[in-house]
Image (cartoon, rainbow, N blue to C red; front, side):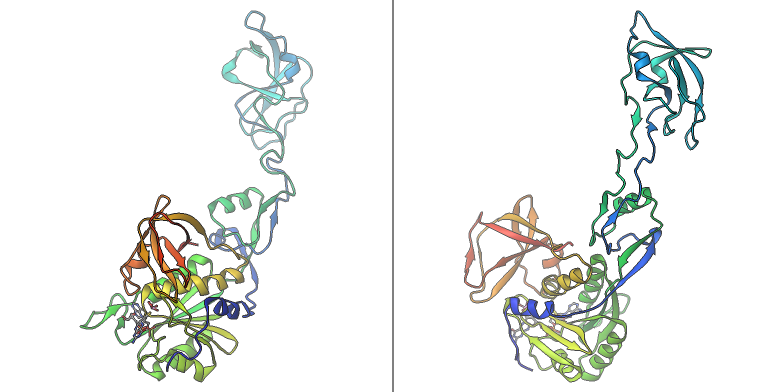
Length: 401
Ligand SMILES: Nc1nc2c(c(=O)[nH]1)N[C@H]1C(S)=C(S)[C@@H](COP(=O)(O)OP(=O)(O)OC[C@H]3O[C@@H](n4cnc5c(N)ncnc54)[C@H](O)[C@@H]3O)O[C@H]1N2
Ligand code: MOO
């Protein structure tokens, strides 16, 4: 099957943007929330800390009682009780009084400062203070960490231990997250075998299947490896039908070009519709976008670097959109290390490694796995640009999400 429906990258992207998928939301308990994507803005339901809190072990005082204290003329206060963390103080300070208090305890009524115990002298129930305390000394005021009603986490945020820390601090038992879009992944080719199997002459281990499943998982979706289709229609058809049962989106790698064994486009056409076959970019021209039973089906090139570059350009943005994370693909500015020539007439995506603000081109070709493993991202070179000069400023789209 020759390339029949070659389009520009923009056309391919606008077709993908027209896909409407309803993935929905679910609530998960906080212990299952790590790595999930938050479905709504989350506000704090309480002040944190929820009470004025001592930040040291020492004596809670009325600061004004200590204003006259000096080395020569210490102020004496009477200790009238103790407050410990986790309890509500039963004592209330009056003029000339102090209360022993531990770190993290609630301040007793009328106290506005805590003097560390090492800064006072105690004899019986009298403490001697040699330096004035100021209001707020040794106290963390209610709500100074987080205010009630304050925005804690934005919709579309991927939960790391930092955000789960915030949610726990604010007492959330559950959090509303996007359901994981399920991406069913198929590798193709008689030569592809899985690690653990014997490698016979002419065979190679699967790269794309592993990489796509894990890239999907990293983005916040659920990658499901369906299997390796052999180079025959029935094998591919069988796996696509299986993939349609488990996936919201199907991603197939290999068999995407026009060679005699490249069946992907023709099988998709048989089961549904091919909307794009060929994108005017390099690498990754042999790319298919189709729809079967309303589900997007991507046929990515077999060459690992072409496959992963196009995953980043086409599939990752769709997943990010479904997860409320639009615009989360990261780009940085860098200077190109040395002159490179580009393919005239085709928009090129050049893999580069970042060394500080220098982008080092990786020129091993898109058939090499190390072209993307060593790359931090890629530089886009427009079709009308024939070369990039040493030191020229470029934008690098990063491979990490
Ligand atoms: N006559 C032409 N031949 C090729 C052209 C061309 O323009 N004219 N373009 C080359 C380019 S560029 C690409 S990209 C590939 C894409 O072809 P396919 O998508 O049909 O991929 P395959 O032929 O199935 O495989 C290509 C290559 O990649 C290896 N591969 C495939 N799947 C995996 C996998 N899961 N893990 C690791 N490696 C994989 C496969 O063994 C091949 O070596 O076409 C070129 N040919
Ligand atoms: O189109 Mo291939 O994807 O140039 O490497």
